[in-house]
Amino acid sequence: MFSFFKGKKRKTSTSHDGRDRGILVFEHTSEVIRAEKVLKRAAWPIRVMGPPPEVRSGCDLVIEFPLIEKLNIVRTLRLEGISPLDAVPVSSPLLQPVDIFQVKDLGKYLMVRAANMKITVDRETSIIVNVSGGGCPDVPYLAARMVGKSLAEAPAPNEIGHTLCGYALHLAYEEMKRRCLP
Image (tube, rainbow, N blue to C red; front, side, top):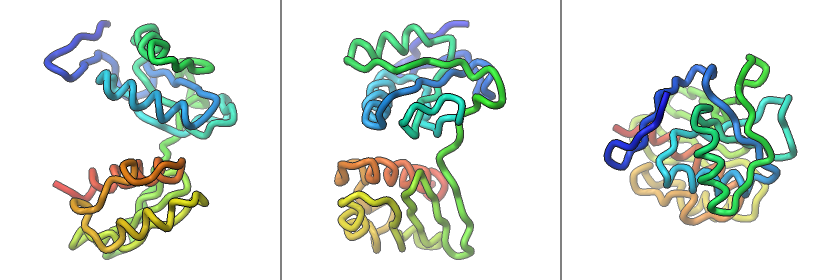
C-alpha cells in the first residue's frame, strides 16, 4: 500500500471499514480542531469522530485516519507543534470511533446534531429554522446570525464562532449542507 498526490488531492489505498484505520487521541478538543485543520490542509483523508470508551482521555473527539499513513500523519502534526497522546489502530469493534452526527427526520424539517449542537432546516426551502444546544456564550449570536437564512446564505459557524459549540455547530452545518444542497 502507498499514498501519492494526484493534483492537490491526496489519494490513499485504504478503505473506510475500520480494518486499516486508526484514531488519533488528544488531550484537549482544541488540539483536535488544530490537527483537523492541519491534516485537511495537507489533504489527508481524515474524519473527526467521537472516541470509543476504551480510549477516552478527557477529550470527546478523535481523528480517524488511514493507518498505513500513521508515521507521515504524525510527522505532519509534529511539524506544526501538535502531538497526539496516542495513535491507536482500530483493531476490534470495541475500538470503533463513534459517529458524532445524529440525524432526525421531522417531516418537513431535518435536524442534524453534532455533539451538543443542533441545526434544523426546512427541507423545501433550505432555510435554517433553529440553532440550539451547547452552553457556550456565542450560541445565541450564532443562532441570530444563521436562523432565517438559507444554508447557502448563512455564514459558516467556524467563521463567526470561536468556541467548542461553534466548532460543533460547524460540523452539523457542513453535514446538513452535504445532505440538503446539490
